[in-house]
Image (cartoon, rainbow, N blue to C red):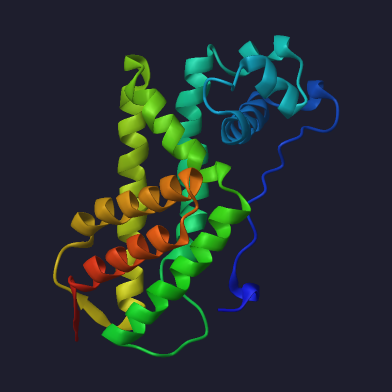
Length: 226
């Protein structure tokens, strides 16, 4: 698979240029959410202090409470907006949607899934903090009752994105799903998280390949020709 097919890592406009006074509250919120996501990717949730986030956004610390009433409110916004948007773009590169191939059928979809998993692995190696941030936020939310609903909502959103992608992939490959994609999606996301954790822990290509093969094998048991 040529590297020209591998999307570049998502790059938000983390910095805020120009006089702060010209920024609307919505603009400040957006800048802080995006900066918080990047800071979490680089330093973890515990390291994402309001001071560090504001510095990354190019804002004085005193301006934080004009946009969010608390750090908890900011983290909620990150899980509600930044994570799903970023993962949605990543899934577009991962799921077998689009591309120039006109091949259809079960084997075509199997081949495409392996190709796109290779592309995902390249994305992961280029910027592992992105998915690490998602995993860290989920764990942090679980351990903080005030954020548990946000963590649950974040993963439900991710499952929904995966289900949409699988449905679209099935249409492109002209296959029939034997199981509702809504039931396959959580397993799909769980495997992506497993790949991420193994890469972050050991970067063991053999283990990563085994997980990828298991994912494709499992997904393909739910597929039939039309």
